[in-house]
Image 1 (cartoon, helix red, strand yellow):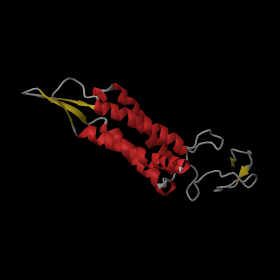
Image 2 (cartoon, helix red, strand yellow; image 1 turned 30 degrees about the vertical axis):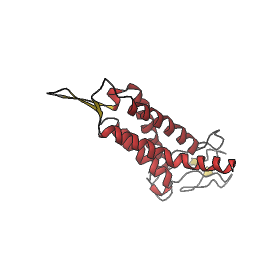
Image 3 (cartoon, rainbow, N blue to C red; image 1 turned 90 degrees about the vertical axis):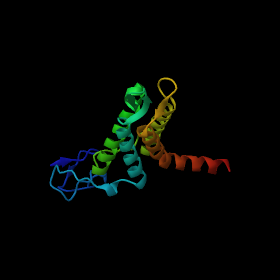
Image 4 (tube, rainbow, N blue to C red; image 1 turned 90 degrees about the horizontal axis):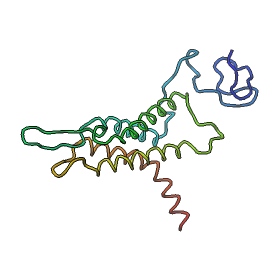
Length: 179
């Protein structure tokens, strides 16, 4: 028998709400005990955009960001090899993708008494990623003759796409307060 995480009351099999205290106890109903169901409808439209953009950013960090034509050979560098600090957006992107997957399975949510909400947490993470990717994009290594490659443009675009749907409501709210 399962117990409620809030009141420790006994939960009937397949219960989604504790009969003793009314706490929501899970979203795994309809499956075998212990079975995890991946439900994309549990994610908002914004979550899906942020998750996919974070996945694209993660991949782009391994692509060629910069190249230099040295005559006979062309030297290239990925975002990660050119700028070690881009491991921070890499880790943030992994965390966001994992968070979205866990959210879609109902295995993770912020506690009700958390001082920040989920969107604030994601906005902070995507802002940090965007700033570091923008710095990495603008800071071409080496001297003249170094050019940007596809990975740099893809990474910058993905960082922007991950940030915009989270930042837009904050910007609109601030504009509304100043009017």
